Length: 157
Image (cartoon, rainbow, N blue to C red; front, side, top):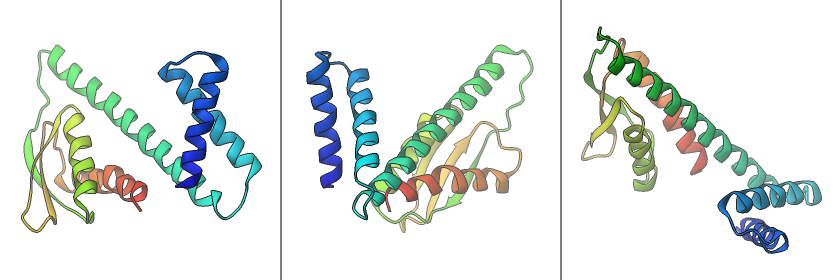
């Protein structure tokens, strides 16, 4: 946690030095601070932080890629005269344990066009999802578990 605070302070210092207080400049300062920390302190304390930042970056890039694909698929479905939808509801068993992890997973699924998180079972072991395009239920479960759920679990470990 101390390294995250140091990285945030380096990002703020970068913004102050450049005189540009924008979101993009903050992200640039954060990335530059991350690089400085990584190069200057290759110790046991920075290794978990660096690994976690890479996991978060992988998580965000995966979500953005899935978001782009889903948007294109739904757009194609809306704009073409023939419909290829096979909507349905599937139950996905959950390995996530905390409420925050489940909340993040359900939010990601709901934010992705063509899918909607409907409900979580009382024991928090099953997530019910409505999807517009279900060709194979097993494949859909596998995509959710190995895609979104695995990355959410990695980020919150």
